[in-house]
Amino acid sequence: MELVEGDALMTRARELAGSLAAGPSLAIGMAKRQFAAAHALSLDQYLELEFAMQPLMATTQDHRKGLAAAREKRSPRFIGA
Image (spheres, rainbow, N blue to C red):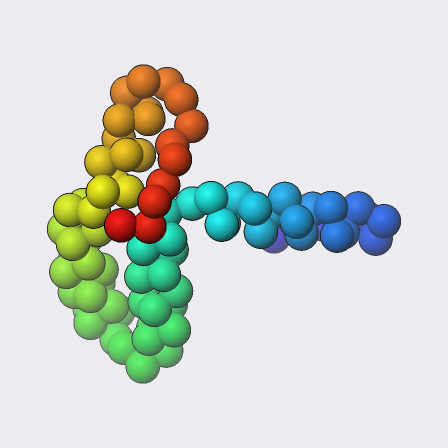
């Protein structure tokens, strides 16, 4: 959670939106789906879902781009694939 002064709210909201838009959209989308399903799952079921999704996300081009960017000490440029 973050507290922002009223006059800085829209600026901060745009910064956060830009950060999310530049992020790995497949991984963010999967996380949103998992969060949405969480209320209907037990902890064990949720952990099984997470365990199943991790290897899938590790096969994406965005994952490879993120790892390459970390190795090269630069910001990643995700493509949504």
